[in-house]
Structure formats: structure tokens, C-alpha cells
Length: 236
Image (tube, rainbow, N blue to C red; front, side):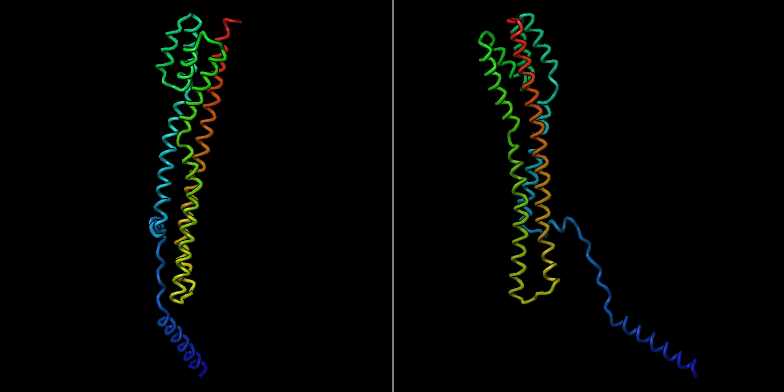
């Protein structure tokens, strides 16, 4: 009797579990989060952010290789100029500087063309050419700084615009479910993430280029002082 009762109870439990399982809908497979889809869902704000990213990278690499070329070792040029000046071959020294096609070469060439004038005039001529060469190296670097500043702002603008749209839709449909809010909000926050990423990269690139320019300036100043000392040697 007891055995039959236990058997009936177990049967009822199994039947209940079976009915519950059948009544529960199958779990909805979660959609994979793809990076490309997120960028597309970010909306129109992703277009200016993408343009800023491309602009910043193009300017960075163009300036990087230009500044790197200007910062190459010019010890051989200085040695050739020193040797020609000490042996009185002024025209040869000017030709060497002209053919070098470097910032230092153009500075030394201007100084050699002023030989015979007071040292102050030669120093002033070299300094003026140095300022022009530095301004050439710094060309468009400020644009990268602008990109670093406004890219995050575009990102925040996209997020704010998305949040406004979400609450506007809620006010029209009276649907305040968490799924509607979170589903739209995470997509709109992609613009903030993209803007911050572009801004951080541009900020780093901006300071890398500025540090490279500072090193070139220091090197040009050192070589210019050495050149002035060389011109003053005969008069000592």
C-alpha cells in the first residue's frame, strides 16, 4: 500500500515538472554584440567623429615623418661647413648647406651669406630662419589638438540627442519598460565611447609631435651656437 502511494506521488511530480517545462517558452538566444553594428547604430554623429579620426591620423603621420626627417643627425654637415670655413672656402660651404635641403642647412646658409657683417646681424638672420623652420614643422599640429578637444564633445552630443529621443518616444507611447530605455541608451552611449577614444588618441599624438618639435628646436639652437662660435674663432 505504501509502495503504491509513493509511486503515485512520484508520478504526479514528474507530470508537474513536464507540464511546467512545456509551458515555459524556450530561452531566446542572445544576439552577439558586433563592433561594426554598434558603430552603425551610433547614428549620424559617428560620421563627424569618423572624419575627425581620419583627419587626425593623416596629419599625425605626415607631421611625424616630416619632423623625423628634420631631426636626423647633421654632424657631418657641421663638420663639412667647419672644414670649408677654416680653409677659406666660403662658396663651397654655402653650396653644401644649400644642397642639404634641411632646416639646419638653410639656417647655416643664411648665416654664411651674412659673413662680413657684425655677429649680431648674423645671429639675427639665423634666428629668423630658425623661427620660420620651426613654424613649418609645427604646421597643422594644432588641428590635432582641436580634434582632441571636439571629438569627445561630438560623442556626448550624440548621447544626449539619443537620450532626448528615448524620453520623447516614452512620452508618446507611455512605455517606460526597462528594456526600451536600456536598449536605446546603450546604443546611444556608443557615440560617447567613440568620441572619447578618438579624443584620447588625438591628445597623445598631439603631445608626441610637440615633444619631437621641442627636440628639433633644441638641436637647431645648439648647432646655431656652435656655428656662431666657429665664426668668432678667428677674431679671438
